Length: 353
Image (cartoon, rainbow, N blue to C red; front, side, top):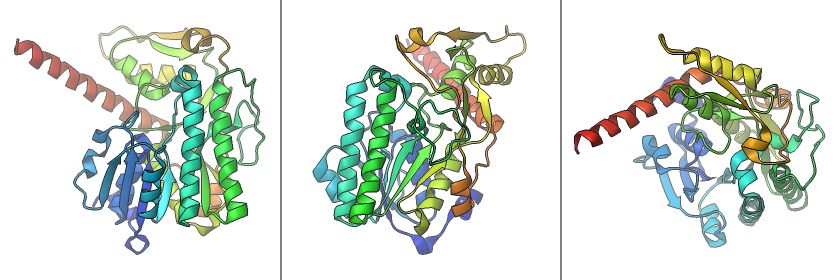
C-alpha cells in the first residue's frame, strides 16, 4: 500500500459505496481511494463519458463490482442502492461543450437521474452525497464564494445557465428530502477539478491546452482570457469527499471543494507554453478565440470563480495540497505519454503494411 493509501485507510469504517458515474474521471479516483482503505465499491456507469480503462488499476480487486447501465434505469438503481450503505451520485452530463451542444438532453438527464437516486436513497435510508458544482453561483463575482453566496444568472434563453439551474434544482430536492423526510444528504460543490484521466473534450481547459501544446498547436483561449479559475487536483478532491462522508455534521449541508490558486486563462496558457517549450522549437502561440466562435452566439461566462473553503476546512481539516505547477506537470506528462503511444502505434501499423 502506498503512503497516500495508508493515510486514508480506516478499516473500521468499511462499508459498501455505490458510485454512480464511477468509471468517470472523478469516480474512478474515488473508487481507488475507497478500495485502498478496505471499503467495497459498486460502480454504475453507462460509459458515455466514463471508460472501463479508468478502473484498470483496480479491475481485479475483489471488492469492486462494475455494472454497465444508466442511472435512469429505476429498477437497477433501486437494486444497487439496496445493496449499498452509502451512495455518491457523480453521474451527470457535464462540461461546457456538452451542455451548450445538447442542452435539452443534459438538463433532463441531470434532473431525472438525481430524482431517481434521491428517492432510492430515501427508500432504503442510505446516506447520500450529491455532487454539485460552482456553476450554481453563476456570474457572482463577490469572491471568494461562500456556500451562502447569491446565485447571479443570465437569461434562461442562454443554454449555459440551464446546467446551473438543473444542479441547483437537484440541490433543492436533496435539501427538501432532508428536511421533510430525514434523508442523510451532503451536497458538494466542485470547483474545476483536474488530474489524470480527465477527458480533454467537453470544455476541460487544462487537458485541452496541454494536448495542444504537446502537439505543437496554438493554445486556444476563449474570450479575452481575463476570466479566472482555481484548479484542484482530483486526489485532493477524493480526500475531501471521503472526509465529508465520515462527518455526521455534514448532513443537510453544502460544501465548496476546490483549489485556491486563482489564475487568468491567458496566464494559464502562457504557463503551459513555458512548461512545454522544447529547445529548437518555435514558441507556442496563444490564440484568443471569441466566445461566439467557440460556443455559438449569446454564450456567457463567469468572470471569476474562487471558492471560500472555510466551511469544509473547519469541519474536516481538509485543504488542497497539490500546487498548480504540480497539476500542470502531471497533465503534460500524461499528454506526452499519450502522444508517444499514438506515435508508436502508427509506426507499428505502417511497418506492418
